[in-house]
View 1 (cartoon, rainbow, N blue to C red):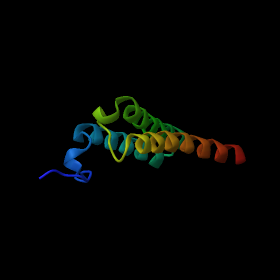
View 2 (view 1 turned 45 degrees about the vertical axis):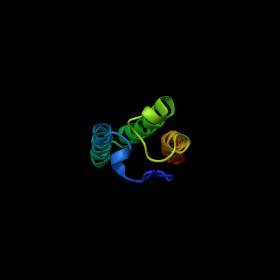
View 3 (view 1 turned 30 degrees about the vertical axis):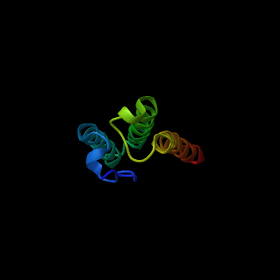
View 4 (view 1 turned 120 degrees about the horizontal axis):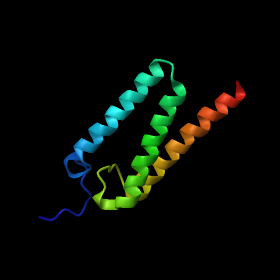
Length: 95
């Protein structure tokens, strides 16, 4: 029996070690934010999002970071990172 639909099981996508690494970086950024280092936390969140988007774009199907399609993952990661930086700095300019 062949499958004509995409897998939705996580065991067929991504690499758990890489995903745990991303989680650790996000926790570090959250701790930074909790201690009041919002610029550093925003930079870490943004860099993580952009790097995971670029990894997905460069490595395509061999990427350790997979959520949906290559285009979707790359766009969301890079756009989220840039968007976080734009929002952070625009709020700083208003103060």
